[in-house]
Image 1 (tube, one colour):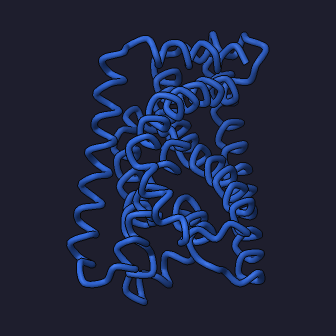
Image 2 (image 1 turned 180 degrees about the vertical axis):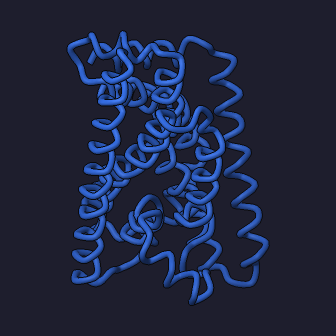
Amino acid sequence: MAFIIIAFKSKITYRSAVLFSVIGSIIDIFIKIALWAYLYRQDKGMTEYMVMYTVLSSMIGMLYVNNISGKIGDKIINGTIAIDLLRPMRFLMSSYMQCLGEMLANLLMKGIPVLLVFGIYLWRYSGHIVYAQVPAAIVAMILGHILYMQIFMMIGLMAAVFMEIWAFHRIMNDIILFLSGSFIPLSLFPDGLGRLNSYLPFRFLFSFPLELLLGKTDLVAVSRNFVTLGAWIVFLGLLIWGMNRRMMAKLVIQGG
């Protein structure tokens, strides 16, 4: 809990950075809304749907903090991981708690202004929301948060092998931006790319919760998606556990 509080306080300390971050988020959403409104200017229903999609996607994106890879990687590279290993809390968990504090700060500092600015759209087009599926969507967002953090934890642990991980971080960021449905709905993808993406975990980050919020989904399909998402989380959890054990063994062998 202390890690969360410290990270939260440090995040809200720099007010000018917070202000520019909020302004940047609002401008980004306005640009996306303007783009979709132009593309679907002859289809009012689709325009309303894409406005809701864009605003809700931006809100979901605030649950994801990808700098955990940098926190883990920097500690491995500069050797400060040795200090973290002396603390009672596990190394990966302490890094996650710091990012959790930053995420909560983002929700407070960016989420509230975004809601104030774009809340009128959420109210005006609220008919597109399937309220019966909101609880399932919330669960999907929580599981998506876990999946996202696991992906970037793995990239951070790669610093035990590669001295520079920024390229892996950038590539993964771009892949998620494209294949998760954060900007372009996956229903607009070509059939071949859509089938390929169905075997990957990225669609669970944005597309899955947004589908639950904005469209009636078959119960069997929802259950199947939740099982697949859970399997991915277990698989990546085991992979992280193995990578962490190998890194620890390497530290012991080298006298770290």
